[in-house]
Image 1 (cartoon, rainbow, N blue to C red):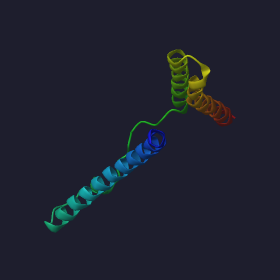
Image 2 (spheres, rainbow, N blue to C red; image 1 turned 90 degrees about the vertical axis):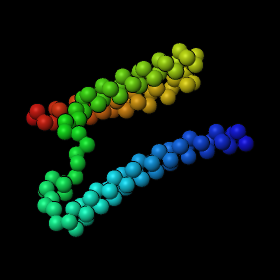
Image 3 (cartoon, rainbow, N blue to C red; image 1 turned 180 degrees about the vertical axis):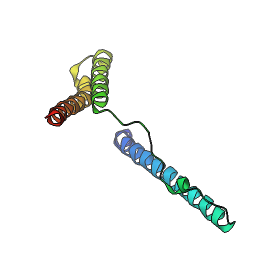
Length: 117
């Protein structure tokens, strides 16, 4: 029974996280629509800003910063798992974000060279 739970719980957790995020966005959108409907019913003037979607962040993401952060997370995770669990067996999971960051860095350098020409 414990082995089955050990396999099911991580997947169930991921599904629950996705479900919670989806439902929170749906409830936020529903409350926003109800606010607009009530304002229209009472004859209030609505600002055009109310109909535009909210942007998550006003600053643009920098691909170089993203690549370096991923590389740093990968190295830190690799070292932590290596020293705490005593071997490469678990530390290899740190290679995933490390290689993602290296891939992002290579893509940044390739695109940087293309835009300069």
